Amino acid sequence: MAKGAKRGGRVRDKWRDKQWIVINAPSAFGGGALNYVPVTDADHAKKRVIENTMFDILKQDPTQHQTKVFIQIDRINEGIATTIFKGHEYAKEFLRSLVRRASSMNDDVHDYTTIDGYTFRVDVIAFSQRRLNTSKRHEIRMIARKLLSDKIPKLTIDQFVQEATMGKMGADLLTEAKKVASLRHIGIKKTKLISTSETRAIQEAKVIETVPSPVEEEGENEVAEEPPSESLQ
Image 1 (spheres, helix red, strand yellow):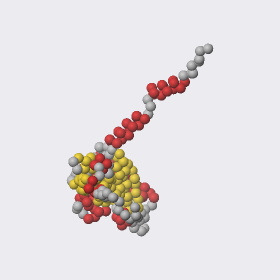
Image 2 (cartoon, helix red, strand yellow):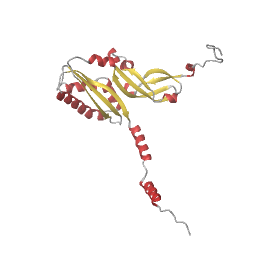
Image 3 (cartoon, helix red, strand yellow):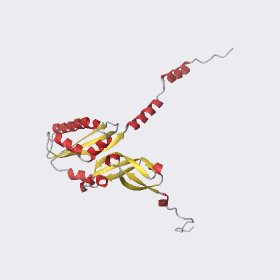
Image 4 (cartoon, one colour):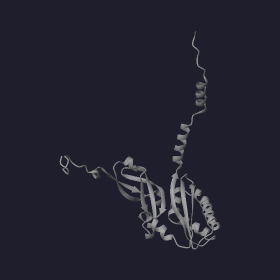
């Protein structure tokens, strides 16, 4: 066949094989329709992570574009997908706008678990008006750690998501931290879902299955210690 000649047969249009599904927001954001995406196989689309901004979800304030939100498809039923909150983070452009000369950036990363068993890795970030010494920076980190350790275990997953992404948690941090130093900004820079009570139960069950029972170990030892039989003369 000459180079560049067309092969016989039709070219398959992959887009015709796709089905479109409606992605609903997590319950913390009302659960309404958020995205409309194509998928080849609905089963394979589960666990897929989709990125939005807070403005896409709430459509209230243009400054909400500075916060990215990640949601994960949990279940799909009749073309409608329910999702869970996977995490959020500040946009890079917003972070760059917070950096100033002759000031300090301070952050603290720690894992916290909500009252209903969702464990999140939470990254708190603070920017001061002027440079801070090591003692002040450590004190701000300890204030953030104590406040979140007291607060998050009392919140449900929906309450945590709302407070972490809509500024309530950052406002509480500012109220306490400004007693130590003058800050331009303090807030929840990033959250990431680490585990749920369900995923931890599955992991624990797998560990139990792989650990041999004492009875099995004794049986293996007895077989190993049994002397070889002597042949009859």
